[in-house]
Image (cartoon, rainbow, N blue to C red; front, top):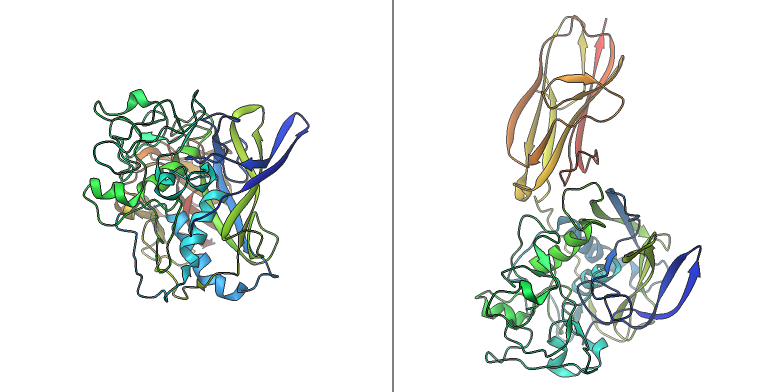
Amino acid sequence: MLYKINQHNSSRLILQFIALLLIGPINAGVFEFASNQYGADVITHPTGYKGVGGKLTVTVGISPASSNASKMEIPLKNAIQTWNALIPTTGNVVIPASDIPDEHYDFESVALHELGHCMGLSHPNLGSESGLVKDQKDYTAATKGANNQFDLSSGPDAVIGSSDDMRGDDVNLHWFYKGTNNPFILPSIVDKTTYSQNLSDLPANDHYVANGDRDVAVLFGLPPTEAVMQQGIQTRESRRVLTADDVATLRLAMSGLDMLANTSDDYTVRLHYAGITDNADIVLSFDNKSSFAACTINAQFVGQNQSHIEIQSGKISFNTGFLWYFNQQPAPVTAHTPELSVSVNGQKNSLVLAQGEHLTLAVSLNPNTSGGSPADYWVKAFTPIGDFWLNDHFQFAASDIPLRAYGGPLVNIASFTLFDGSTADLPPGAYTISFAVDGNINAIYDGTYEQSITFTINP
């Protein structure tokens, strides 16, 4: 059974913004709305992105009216955690999965796929929306060219969706890693300097863009691997973790309107489980409004920019006419996010000190699998006499606006001393020290990952 994506039914003008309410089957591609109608290179962003950098929180709920609501919670939380981690993997296709009964479809895998749609990602392959049948749907996403038909030839290797496919004048929709055309690897920088839709950026002997299909993965010598956003899942199949292509797509959108990483319009996005409620940006329901599973989205252009679209809301519908397996094992928390700590006199709990006592403030950072990623470093002190920031000379300076301590890769910091001396000259009162790192280098305080500690100095 195949995934199905959203269907559009109308469009209207609202205060000089065009509201795109999904009008007919959209062509597949890395991003929703990429098509002849809106342009092959249109980028779709999650709910809340207005062209300004920062941290987006997208809420996800389960409709109270949905059958299976309580069973949906754990696998949905797992899928949310997986998208928040953004860790590329290989070998993510497990079939038959030992925990999934015969003839059952894995709800967690399908929810993971549909959440990707509701954040703006589309199919890397042509998919069923192309009108093609059987294996032809696995060719790389494109629109019909001047001849108004798909040109499909699998080339000498006979593997559909690979780099030697001959596609005639089909217009490519798939963003690929320049010079490698390998959808299973991820560079440290993901933006328009490293990714392209232009076939001239392919390796010299490649004819077309390779997609994240499991048969293509074999050509790269990988274990069973397929992009989560690739359309198509079988009974007893588990595909619960992301691949490089999935991660790259979302990170490309996160590079903002200029599509350049580490600039002021970059953003990070985090899905937040809101509970069993209809009051969320994305709501899941077994309401039989789709033939299998589908995400329907409402969206609009980002301001006057016709190349970037912001999703306003999403609805994921499931059909009760299938046997669904609801994984009830919470996924282990993966140590992917940086771990930060702040200590006072070697302790990570709040302390009360007498004026004149010795004070040592220190911070530490374990980047985990985010090591080497670009980041801004910030240290702020809320004090009885105002706010102070650690500046780029590693000295505390009074400031009402954030001062960055450092911009560079995330590295392991076993311990860095901020202060080591007597409290005799520090005014009595409460002090809060915050240590934060952002997921980009743009000198804008986002506080993506942050830890704080409070201590009090008594007279």
